[in-house]
Amino acid sequence: MSELIKVDNEYKEWIAGISTDFRKSQIRASIKINDEMLRFYWKLGKGISSMSEQFGYGTGFYKTVSDDLKSILPDVKSFSPTNLKYMRYFYEMYPDAVICPQVEDELITDANRPQAGDDLQIIFRIPWGHNKIILDKCKGNSAKALFYIKKTIENNWSRDVLLNFLGTDLYERQGKAITNFSNTLPIEQSDLAQAITKDPYNFDFLTLRERYDEKELKNALIKKVNNFLMELGTGFAYMGREVRIEVGNTEKFIDMLFYNTQRHCYVVVEIKTGKFDSSYAGQLGTYVVAVNHQMKTEADNPTLGLLICKDMDKVEAQYALESTSQPLGISSYELSKLIPEEFRGSMPTIEEIEAELNE
Image (cartoon, rainbow, N blue to C red; front, side, top):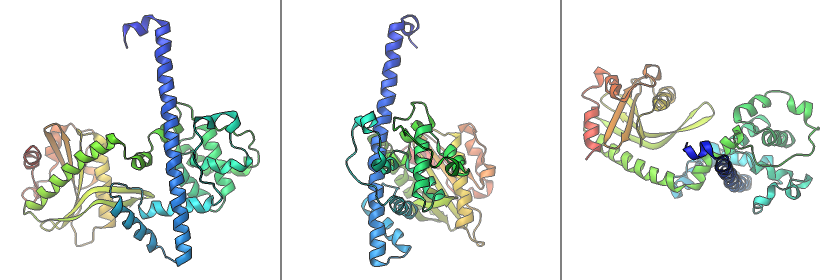
């Protein structure tokens, strides 16, 4: 903080007002993005529902649609079969929602607060993650679903809090007692405001320039690492990029998946464009264990994880067999000690990877 802000109250209040206005504008912008995205999801869900009923498509239709959309929009992760199913559920839960242009900022004034006939518009006001939880817990009961959407907006609930209340009989006790619903902006520092401004689905929908630049860098690193591993002559077979796995009810995407024919094991490769962070080890460990449970057979050795972090001209690579063997928060210079002795010779060394990426 500057000395001026410490001694001049008028200046201090002015700075505080700017930060408050910025935060409110950020929330309004996020709400608009979220609104547009959810209206798109609803419309796509309607199309999927209509096509399925008209032509009698089965569950394989979701994968067909997913594959075709990904081929046209390869950088968008939102078109997974699971997410497409939720889009259909979203439409079928609220088939009478009206898709119309979003009202501008005036939507938060008294004159534009939802009336009885406009209740369904609030389904576009909460993050997609919140909507998915409500769809799971309120199957076929749109009145109950709308009740929890209203409660989420009124109380600025996070997903965890929403999930907690969905497990109670709150709707049965209060379902008919909601009056004077206030459709205002989320409180600036609330969990709902945090969720809606940081929703990864919104970033995916927008393909923001910042993310685009980072993605370009990541794409270049992935291409270089892929070529390097394939040219080593140590048995790396490419299995795919952005490989989708499910961890519980959550979709995850592995940067690259290989199979090493010399070690007879899958190799999960995660690429990070910045310096090492302890959370990356936990993420890698989750992917390794998921592959062990979902893909590995009795004929395969345990899956190996490789984490590559690029920070300026320094690269750190981490190998681990199980998440339990991955120390969290380990300082970067110690990462090289994690390579199991038996893998030396069949896997590239950290020095080899550094030399390759620094060229």
